[in-house]
Picture (cartoon, one colour):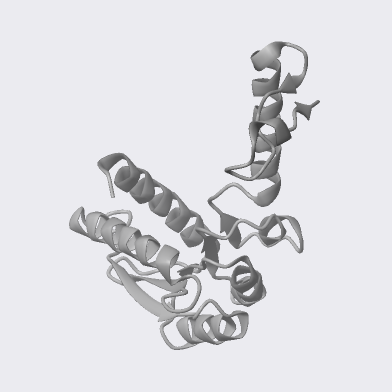
Length: 197
């Protein structure tokens, strides 16, 4: 992970932990902040979850090496595998909250698992950061002041692609059409369509 991304992750994690502390009962200065990581370490989300977990570990190490969160609380990580399955994610999050006494949870890769753990985090007043899940339903439907998404949702991504494509098309020939190929790679040039706006 490059230095800029590492710094951005540390700043984001710090701000979100601060938001979590604001929503949580006071933590005595000597007590560590228990942070849960509920990611698909196996299953379909494993390739994406592995890098996220490494980034979280790097950020926690950096924060702890500087005296901890708010220079008062060391962060203790509790990592659990959701297997990228909603039912397993619910069980994992309940264990993190009840057994490990986490105050915040970073999870998960899958939007379905993020939606499954959202009500559990809200009920227990535990901060929930969805780092990779991008369904707009995570923050739009059934609002929770304990759940935050840190990536653009599907609506934002779709709108950006359509807007960018329309702007590109207008620049290409000024007529609102684009010579962008709308066929499969390898198709004959004569079979290409033009995109109109």
